[in-house]
Structures are given as C-alpha cells and as structure tokens.
Image (cartoon, rainbow, N blue to C red):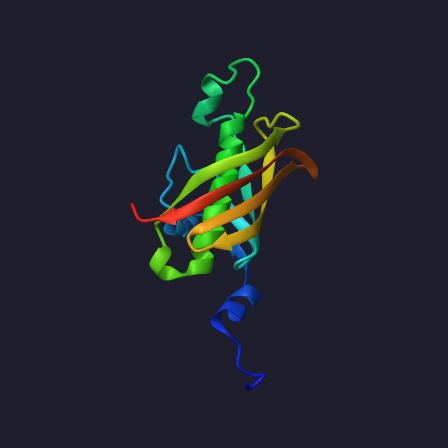
Length: 162
C-alpha cells in the first residue's frame, strides 16, 4: 500500500478550524436565541475536540428569575453550552450533509458545578470526544472562567434527523 495515500478519516483527524463564528454555529446547529448558549467555537480539531465561548450577559432572560438579586447562570444552561459545543464538533466532523441535524443528549454522568457563573464571565467550554460508535458519541467537558474550573461532566449524545 502506498504510504502517501491518506484515508478520509485520517485527513479529518488532522484538520483544525481556528474559529467557528456565530453565523457558522447557526448553520451547524438549529439552536436560536434564547437557547443558543455559545457565541463561537475556537480551537476545533475535527473528530477530537473543541472549545466553545459563551459571553455571559445580564441581559439574558434567565437572570430575571435566577436569582433576581444575585444572578447565577443555571447549571442546566452550562450543561447546554457543553452540548452545543459538542454538537458543533460532531457536525463539523461529519460534514455538510449533517448541518442542521439534531444532536440529542442520551445521558449525563458525573456533572459537577464547582463555582457560580455570573454576568460578565466568559465561559470557556472545553469538550473532548472520548468515544464514537456509529451515531453515538461520548464526551468529557470542562468549563472554565478565568482559567478556573466552574463545571465538568461526562455525557453521551446521538445525532438524528428532525
């Protein structure tokens, strides 16, 4: 076999994307305001890892009631930011024919919330693929603010049509 021949999977594993801007994020996943929980994705290594960026703003609707005098980003929305970052990684890995498909949670394990996230914070949502079997993907995610871990979780998801 010729050593110069590289499989499609090997080509994808080597491909990196510096920045996925908000317009591209919205092409890749179907989420929209107020449920779009990432502003961009950086350092995406196709088939392997990505980092989502979420600029937390007091103007977001969840802060009207969680908690009005002490606004804290709900843990479930931090988990959603993890999922959306993973979905961008999955769709960018699988290619154009998968754009706009849904990536559904199947399970969440060992989710931990270590420090509150508040308006003004910038969440860096680091996701790494642990395993892939057909349409099922498993991830490990760590969310950091100012370099300090605020949340982490392991989870699995499946890509499906609407």
